[in-house]
Image (cartoon, rainbow, N blue to C red; front, side, top):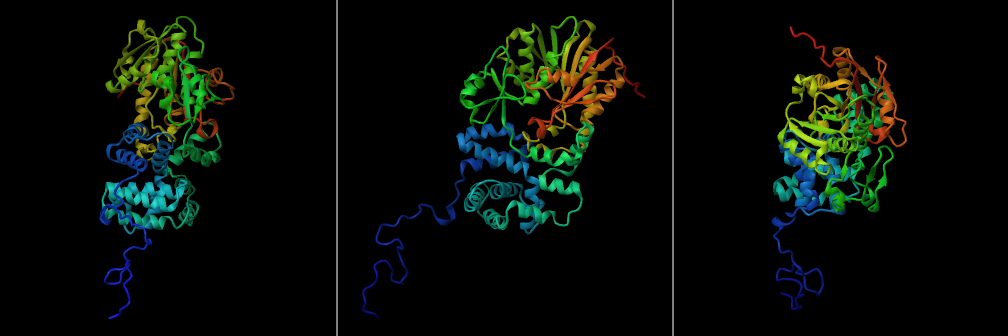
Amino acid sequence: MSNEPRDPRRNEAGRQRNRGGSGTRHFSAAAPSQRRRIADPARLAAYEVLRAVDEQDAYANLVLPARLREHGLSGRDAGFATELAYGALRGRGLYDAILARCVDRPLANLEPAILDALRLGAHQLLAMRVPHHAALDETVGLTRAVIGAGPSGLVNAVLRKVSRQDAAAWTAELLDGLEDPVARLALEHSHPEWVVRALRQALVAHGRDAGEISALLEADNLAPVVNLVALPGIGTLDEALDHGATPGTLAPDSAYYSGGDLSRLSSIHRGTTRVQDAGSQLLARALAGVGIEGRDTDWLDLCAGPGGKAALLAALAAGQGAEVTANEPAAHRAELVRKALRPVDHDAWNVVVGDGRRYLQIPAEQRFDRILVDAPCSGLGALRRRPESRWRKSPADVADLTVLQGELIDAALAALRPGGVLAYATCSPHPAETLAVLDDALRRHPRVRLLDTAAAVNAVTVDGGIEGTVHASGGNTVQLWPHLHSTDAMFLALIRNDGDTTPTLPTKG
């Protein structure tokens, strides 16, 4: 046995006790099995959004604000959570293709909660300015905290494989040998193939070059700038401009806001300033602005929920001495409409609940002067704002919706007085939901006429320049595009009733 004095930093077995020198060592209070169980609040909020979308068929834009409040997130943390949730949802197609190369089993065999965690990790690694070690550690910690210790090992191993290449290298690898141009676009821009085909067809149908499809798909994947509108005669943009907003270049009384948390704007709380896409603003303004002869006191918003366009339309109606009837078939959405309309003079609006198709039987003396049909649609024009929508819809959904759209137009035209104007709008450029529905309606109703819709839109646009798509009947329609106008892909057709409003409907056999 050696007589040399023992190093006080080593135990009897010779193992070092304290590698940190002579200072006091601080040990973790948690056992190894308990470490990394606390999830970062921003990442946890994003994860909960993805789970709600998957489990409850929820809309991310409706779930996210509540999650941000629940976790006390604001400013940069709220922005991080928003980009993480929305980015993972937008990029799901590409990320799943990459993950499939890194997992030793079909993705369908993974627990959905684990797959959502992997998507969040992939987005951080491939599309956000997050250091790789942070993306890995935090995603593994999130998994351990909300799913379990076992799955965290799988997530760690898979994401380490993902981190070996950047997004461009992964995309090049996945595209190698893939010859179908639609499949290539779908993978590169993370859209379902049927959506790529539909959007390319829509470009051509509305007078654009099919070669714009890449720019359109790319625009779909950009986070949209928040658009604000001050309700005319009620609100102003002064407060928003004082907080860094810039005047809108498309719609009057609008602004672009990138200052983060909107809750600090008192005008937002009062409802006198609203968040609304500039394209939607133009639709309401174009309908309110087009000239009609005779009485102009009774307006109808046939599909009013959740109330954004109804609020703007009612404010415009109040300024013209008219009243808007806001119809909404679902009672809970009708409450949202009432809330949206509260800042407007109560003499300028009323909310009714019921299926819009019942207006097909309206008495002649109760017909309306102006009617908005913002029809239920596939929402392919709002993929920037509703990133999960692209993965939910199918061509069958479009076919079902076109039947309803036609029935709503029939009811609206039956409720439109001679000389009155109807606006048919969809948040979709799909030709089946836009031009085809319009063509069928014009054939069924020979006494109605398509107007110069582009002229009506340009009359209420800040700088004009919106092109119309010429129709065989002599009028034109307007199709807005994310890659051209930085709006949702809104469609609008203005139709005037030139005679008896009794519809000429096909005989059912």
